[in-house]
Length: 328
Image: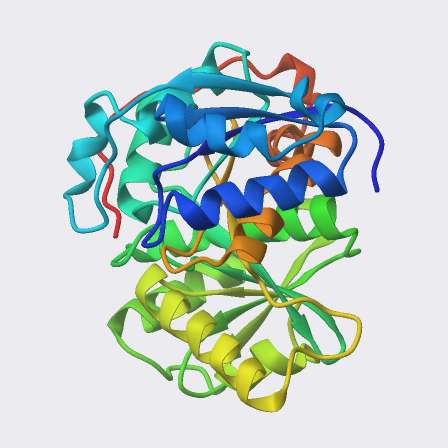
């Protein structure tokens, strides 16, 4: 367990089976990590149920922000503009009451709330959700897995930069190899967006000694021999991620030494945000909380931002609060 206090805001009403699985997952996370503090954002009676199940020593690490309204899984992302559990969790991070937030609610609403409440990094038009898969030869960073469904080539090129920096900071991958997901590895393969993105990536400056290796295929994500970072649009990435998770289940679990990606980090906003599947189980929520704590303790989001800007993370104050967001 990494040392250091981490204060995580948890959206109690986010997800298909909330609040029951969120409460269960939060309980598991608190019991597993003695330096974890949770801000429970949701109805007071739901938070009280969780607190009652803890022993007195653990209870002192729990605080509550009562909020009764939630953004439904079928609601438009713009619903995140109104007061809701996810918006209140974002506000807690913005105000310094929490270090990071976790939600299993609608992805579009979570991304929208994060952009509105925390602001985007400079030169990031559309934030990206990044998941790490336990490939045969080592971890593979896959993005986007649901943040932007129909990105332009320039956005995919920017996401490649984000993914390369994340691989180096969060997973200590030296000089990450970056590939663009397509239907073949030969130049010119793929749809219009892929064909336009490939030459952009060939000349895109990548951080930390990362290099672009060209087009890769779906099996490269599971094997990891050709690329450490695989870039695609959020629609394809989300479908691929869930297909791989289904394959893990059929095969009896992920590769030895690796864990299935149960949560994704949001890159491109000025704060630590973790999104779990809407169909998350209790262990998925606990895994998402653990990921948020890990990223905060490693200062991963600040270090990724600093790596992109070529400066000290503590010097970064500029952020975009443009509210035009296209999400799932």
